[in-house]
Length: 464
Image (cartoon, rainbow, N blue to C red; front, side, top):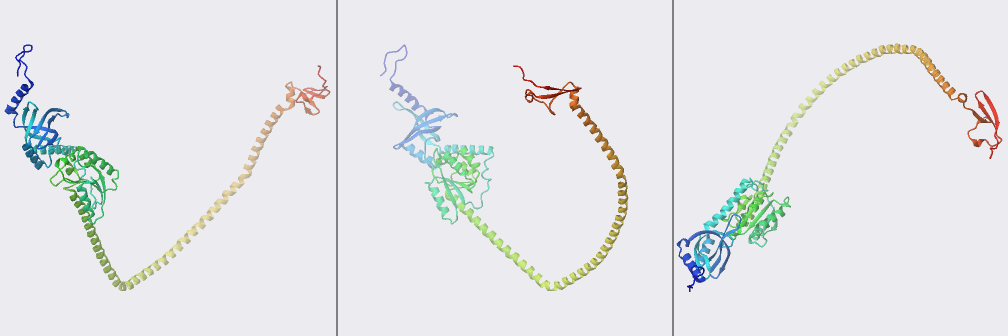
């Protein structure tokens, strides 16, 4: 019921029910808000009985939510939408998916505004996934690494296999069973990883880090995961993971999902197989081809050896047949050669003796001439020696005289007489010079020598 009073001259207030009914009337009757195709991300998605509920949001480039509305899918619409989406995309509707939906605005006075979803276009979701995949591949191409792993050399017989998978996965079990049943010697080791959900990328990256620490031991790396929902494979469309695989120092083989599934790793890995069992078949075929090639080479070696041995046997037989005929001819040829050498040796000896005699005569002649010259030279030297000896003796005597004169001068300077002439005196007891007062007790007779004579004196006791 509306009030008839006014408030500050404004229209009379209405009840909340009237207000929400008015909104509902305008929203529900507006044809522009019915059967609209809207792009949105679904969150808080949940099923309640035959119906489904959630919220539709839109985010800006910074990841901030800029629009939000509650969403409903009633029984008939939900069944149709769910089957249509799963048949096309291969997975169920789930939180975080970006969708193209047909919605109609619905406003209820009690429950408020919501979007009633009546249809879906799965091709948009598939296109969005494919767009992301193309962007990642284009980035790897710009960086020049999109084919880096493909260019690595795969061993002809890969046996040491590093496996990135989950030990409880059926795909891993099928892979191992096929390897073990092949009859070949494989040396696989599982590096445990989570291959579904938010932990997929960091888990695979950690496994690859552990493998790289022992990369010298491994021939290749195998990343395998069995089939499942297509959305479960979205984690394999990741730029950082793709870059890590592209630059990994070992060839990487992937077997992810079903034959119809494609991920970024399928494009950049060394070898792509459609399933885990196909990866096992690839490895087994590699060893089969290597074994066949080894057998071919073995047969070729044996055949070449036999052919070569047969040829050598024929040559030996031919040589054996020729020996009886060749031996006499070879002996005669050697006899003729010895005769020639004997004749040459005799002439060479005679010529050598003649040359040696001539050389000896020349040496004797040189010795005779050289002896005469040497004797004359030695005689001249002997005749000159007395004169040289006399000159040397006279020179030596002169030097010694000068030295004696120098010594005499020094003796004269250092003599006691020279000391007395300089005003000094010498005191003696007997014939020994007095050097200390302690040598002169009272009553000692001493002699004092002066330049012009000497005096004697007796020491007395000093007065006290």
